[in-house]
Amino acid sequence: MKKLLSGNEALARGAYEAGVRFAAAYPGTPSTEILENIIQYKEVRSEWAPNEKVAMEAAIGASIAGVRSMASMKHVGLNVASDPLFTFAYTGVNAGMVVITADEPGQHSSQNEQDNRNYAKAAKIPMLEPSDSQEAKDMIKEAFAISEANDTPVLIRMTTRGCHSKSIVEISEPIEAPYKEYVKDVKKYVTVPANAREMRKRVEVREEVLAAYSNRSPYNKIENEGKSIGVIASGTAYCFAKEVFGEGVSYLKLGFTYPLPDQLIETFCKGMEKIYVIEENDPIIEERVKMLGFSCHGKDTFPPYGELTPDVIRKSVYGTELPVIEYDETKIIQRPPTLCAGCPHRGFFYELGKRKNVMVAGDIGCYTLAFAEPYNAMDFNICMGASFSAGHGAQLAFDLKGDSTRVVSVLGDSTFFHTGINSLIEVLYNNSKTVNVILDNRITGMTGHQENPGSGKHANGSAAPIIDIETVVRALGAKHVAVINPNDLAKVKETLDWALSLDEPSVIITKWPCVLKKMSNLDQEQFAGAFKAKYKVDSDLCIGCKICTKAGCPALSVNPDIKKAVIDRTQCVGCQVCAQVCAKRAIVKEEN
Image (cartoon, rainbow, N blue to C red; front, side, top):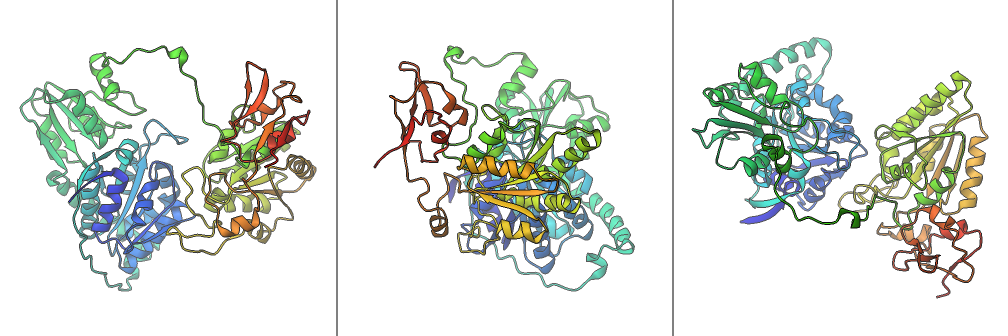
């Protein structure tokens, strides 16, 4: 049977066919849909974890206890999960365990562009790189076999195009992967130094075995032999290369890419007049080819960053691009991303952006958009959960310099559960005078509304206990805590005044649901009347001052013909922020 599947869908199908029984993940583009699709297979216990590290640890525990397991995450998530991964590489598995990293060349929705192939080399674990959806499904099945045969976790590296593009996939029935018996073995699983030193030796032996396998892996192969020009490529870059070079070159297609197949590389490169190595992004294959004594063109020809799409490859090699339809670019309206109409973050950042002598430490989420116009209410961000701890460091530096600048640190509810709790402990333990804001919109908003420990549901939609953020904050020892509706601008202003007046740590929790969230029964009880009203502009009262546009709502604009504000009724959800901003009270609630 054949189906049209994205790479992420194919990975989920492959895991199911491989007999996986436990899967854990934290959502993050471009990996999110992997777990979302595994959820449909009821035989697999699927969970959203608070962060990637605990997802990895849960999958490791399941493997040791005897069931095939996997963890999936975006590339920066593997940074969070690397601690358990490096140790698990020493102990090895019981039942098979696979880690999927979804890298993002081009940084479409990420704060950096790292090449996680480096993790395979650093951790000394095998890695596979699918080039299309069929390979994604097949390779994850092979990965579990490799894992159990070689007593190792296996890394699968995807990239954005491979995750989201679709191709035809031949699917089959799942295998019966028998549960493995758990046998207590402290010399294998307890990594005290005496045991770990012996594990380290076994890692080197395993790597030699895997290097030999790499040379005979069906996913490493020479294609279209006999040409004078050779192209070596892995993953989706192989598909990009074939689109450019066609049948005019020979290919060394690499799918099992750590350890690299030295013998196969040597066989391919001998006698070639010219060799191109096309890989996203670091010169990992290129360096190996040169180490083996062959001259090749890699980062001297292709850019070391961004996606190596066919256009990029063609321009790098031939200096030309395919013709495109010409158009008047001046007529294209630039549409930067913006907070949605009715977003609960809007009112808070409207007020925060007006503060002087304040640094705003940001985090990773929809609210990162507050850095831009019209709010200008974020100064820096680093990684998930870093705002509280980085903000504490910044405040300490200002205090040491005798600078009166105050720091306000902001993060979302899912980010708080991810790594923000530890950051808040840092703040409270060290008695920082930072203002720490948790923007609780009741869901993991940025990645598509996945459940989290505060949403009241599990990954499969079943009811889950709600971890109350205020209760957690107070349990950590916070003495100054305020919970507010961020749409109430007067209350936001009052609460910021209060928090900034303190010389001790304070916590502000803004509590209002994401406008796009499917409201639960509890949400409807807690936020009665939310998103039911509509507002309009009384043109007789409006003077066209445009102050209302400072709220940044995409539902509100100024009509150039009448030079007065207008509200797009289809977008308005009645948050009232613009009505509070208007000095002339020209924005009013509709009667019906």
